[in-house]
Length: 320
Image (tube, helix red, strand yellow):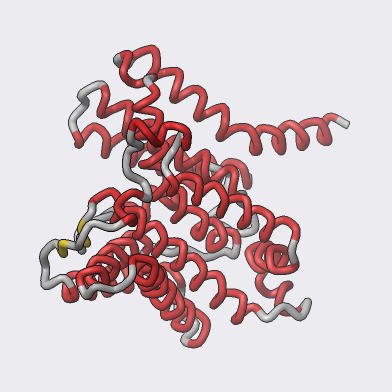
């Protein structure tokens, strides 16, 4: 009986732990930081900044649940910003330019998936290589400089709301992230696709013996994850208003940390969309709080690195 109670307690803590962590971090900065930290304008800024990491984390959640990893997310985001800017510069319709950026990301994910499934190379090594390769492609397309683009409605996807847009509460990009989060959550929890993803992460061999097409599922998961990274790149372009091949450096670590903080396991078979979004919010709140308190960038980097180590350590402790 005591063992059952302990198990239920651990399950409950695993579910609400990230939310409690977010409340603690926000409350800490609300007390120690300036009054501007709790202002409506700063809350909107936090939501806008979370849109990029949170959108990328939706795809990363699927990859990690399936027992994989994707280190190329930051480079794919940078490539997407460059592709969107180049297509807009050619006079293409903004919607087609946006789709082009997302498609570029999906192609990178498809390449990752093909190498992982056909050549049987470890995902960590494959995506570490494409992290450099995709970044190089982005720099080559941009001729190693920022790519200017004409002003379109894409610039307003995650930009600050004007006085006449306050009724929206947060920019369209944030609403898009939330809508996609609901869709991915339903996909993972209530569909056969989601059950197969969890099954592969829990035991790939068992999933294969159960008749699941593991290779096709992995290919789909990596392509889908990169498509989300491409959409995150569109949001990054909206923030920067230019295509920047050096953008999002290290963002893949923030994305992975968001998923793990939210209850995802690097061993596979565990994770949730809600937890990943909470993890992304925790990362953004910490960065915003440090900036509001005037702490230098090196302090923020130390704090972020410590969070990643603690998150992975907690993941191992949960499994023990």
